[in-house]
Each structure stands twice: as C-alpha cells, then as structure tokens.
Amino acid sequence: MKKVITISRQYGSGGREIGEKLAKELGVPFYDNEIISRAAKESGFAEVAFEHAEEKATNSLLYSIAMGMNAYGSQDFGFSSLSLDDKIFLAQSNIIRKVAKEGPCVIVGRCADYVLKDLPELINVFVYAGLDYRIERATMLYGISHKKAAEQVMKYDKRRANYYNYHTSEKWGNMFNYDLAVKTECIGIDATVGVIKEFIEKCK
Image 1 (cartoon, one colour):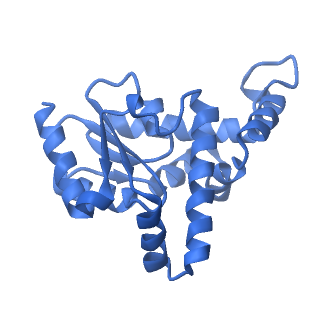
Image 2: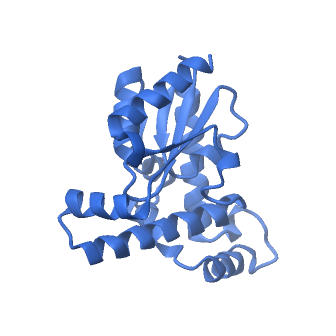
C-alpha cells in the first residue's frame, strides 16, 4: 500500500478508534497526538498550545475576526506577523507533510485532508453518525451524564468545524472534500474499518 489515509470525524462517531484499528490492520503508522508532540519538539512551542488551538475556535465569526486581526494587524505580512494560532497551524502542517513523505500512514484530524490535498495516493475519509448514537457512545466511553454528553458532542463538533473552516477556507463535513464517508451507527466500528480497508484496496 502506497497511500496516506486521513480520517476526519464527528465527535463520538468512533473516528479515532477506527483510525487506530485501520492502521494496525494495514501495518502502517498511526498519527493523532503524535503530530502535536513532533510539532512541539520541532517548533519550540509547548504541546499545550497545540492542544488548546482548536478549543479557541468556538465561534466562527469571532474566531476569524480575531485571527485575521492578529495575523494581518501590521504591515509586515511575513511569518513574524502571524498569530500564535496560525504559527501553530503551520508548524503542525509541516509535520503532517513530513510524516506523509515518510510513507503510508493513517492521520486523524488536524485538517490533514486539506494540508495534503496535493499529495498523490491520498484517500480522505469522513466518519459520522447520528446525534443520539454519538451522545450514547460518549456517555458509555467517558462515564458522563446524557446531558453532559450532549453538550460535549455539540461543543466539539462546533470547534472542529470552526477550526477547519477558518484554516482551510473549506467547509468541514462537506462530502465533496472526501473520497469516502461512512455512517458508523449503521455498521459499527469494526465493520467500518473493513469498509475503509476494502475501499483502499479497490483504489489501487
């Protein structure tokens, strides 16, 4: 297999677990938090800065205004004028490109589908599920109340969408940006891994 697979996912849909299992099945590296660790090490920024970058994207309009003001508030349009969030995104993107060059792998989140859009042999997957399924799964996995799970599902989806929409100028969840979209509540985690694996094999 000479392909790099990116997995974008709705919160609670099982995307990270699917990515891990898929990478194991294919015998290739899996990248999620490892991207943050490498980006922090090479850029000099603290890991917590990368972890909190997505959390700031709570309101798309305010986020875009704030980032735009920080990035272009001076006449110097070089790297030094970028906001911390933009610098972090660029550092993270550099690591994503590096691991993709190192060989076949599975990358979850981090706008990897957009960052690697010009890479040959790229397969972008979107994993999603119905709201009730995701809330139920969150209560089971994290031991939280139904109300808390519902709040988290909505909050994290909003953060991911705003972060992605700002940094890529694309729309998070737009099916035209992906090669395959799978609804996990219909077939389950393991079967979803199988579907993606078969899709990859058919795309040889």
